[in-house]
Length: 606
Ligand SMILES: Nc1nc2c(ncn2[C@@H]2O[C@H](COP(=O)(O)OP(=O)(O)OP(=O)(O)O)[C@@H](O)[C@H]2O)c(=O)[nH]1
Ligand SMILES: [Mg+2]
Image (cartoon, rainbow, N blue to C red):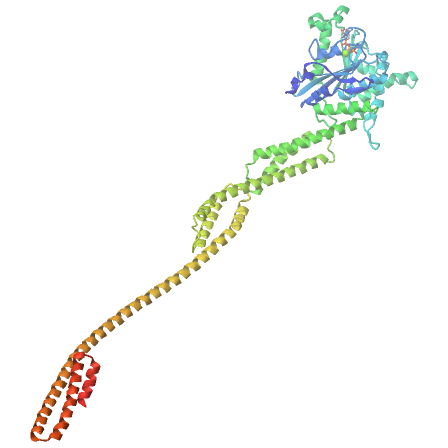
């Protein structure tokens, strides 16, 4: 919700009220609304005796008829302090905060202290304090401004005993003082010449020389006003109209009012809206809604606890809040700028460092603009530490993004290897060499990639390291397969040799068989021929034996014939033996076999 739409912008609301014990208290909701205003506040507070037209004057400043409620009786109307925010009609970068205060001096209240606190708060909170008084500013009126003379009792600058600042330095913190003199019907003339209202005020503030009680009584309030409010203005106002007019002021337009009054209040409004500076700290820093709220809270809390509001401690409390916010805003700006500037991963650390210093500069500028009274640079150190922490986070984030991208790239490139592993292309002799080639290709392709950031090299090294086990497994498989192949080769050679041997053996067997066959054949031929020869020999032997037998028979016959029987008988035995021999040879020859033949031959030869 835009802060202009808060209720405190729509109508005056009670900001500081009295609780049932009569103690001042902040209306939190209203203060909270004001605290949301980011712009510098131009705080116009009005104070003065009751029933003197204060609320009406603020309404004229706000250029409305109905704003702060007016009282039409003699009873005081406004209680506590009321606030009404308006977009500043002239100063665009400011918000006009009108503070209407409870009228002072109502004897029915019977609590002078209450008046003092109301006046004190109006003085401390306003950037402009309008002191409203009726009629001429005479000694009586001046004496009624006792709040000012007692100011030093109701406000202190510092709690610290070592502080150099005292009541005489209050002017450093107090607002522009405007004296608004209502129903002023005197002619502004002095010593016969026209004077301005400011000159009139000055004249009235001039001191008497002398030391009598009267002189002191005369001088004291004047000295106080001059001491505490070094910037002073005075505006006089004619009476707005007749008694009847005054009763219904809220319903009347400027045409219904005395021209002079309209003129006077216009001059007043012009000055307040154009010339009155917004609320600032003594070092010139603008006071926004949050700072105003913090100060209000501090002052009212002090009063509630029966303490004298202390400007420095209120400022310190406010500074703590502001500086904490300044640290937050500064770190937030730094983070925002870094996020907008950087695209992760940042190519290298020096780019990151450069962005850091650039964003740091803007963040520091913002911190210095927002920080309040950070004399010891305590909050600046805190902001720096927090920014450095954020810088570390950015570094980590950069490293992380770079690592993730690099890993992704490698994972993409590694798919070739994964696929080959799946297809078991490396699971063979020489697979390791192929694997190494693929790894080198991945490395080369990876080196060519850009935009991977600072972790590029580290990631490839880790990748290569992670591949060691895989590589070793492939290497071992390679060696195993190479060994197996070697063994298989040896076995193959062995088989070839065995085959050769077998073939050789077969060939030899064939040769042997052939040889055997040839020999057998030859033998058979020999045998056959031998048989034939034997037959022939036997036949020859038998022929010879037959011839021998024939011859012996013939000889026997002859012997017998010749009568040699004994010789014939002997020869007959020989013939018989020869016959048996012949028969044996014949039988042998018909039964075959070389042995017999051999024996026959031997027999024949004997
Ligand atoms: N004589 C005179 N009466 C005025 C003037 N301005 C306002 N009044 C009348 O005075 C009465 C009180 O006006 P307020 O503006 O309520 O006065 P106030 O000072 O805020 O009063 P408290 O809040 O009670 O202290 C009303 O009846 C107004 O019409 C003025 O300039 N002169
Ligand atoms: Mg009032």
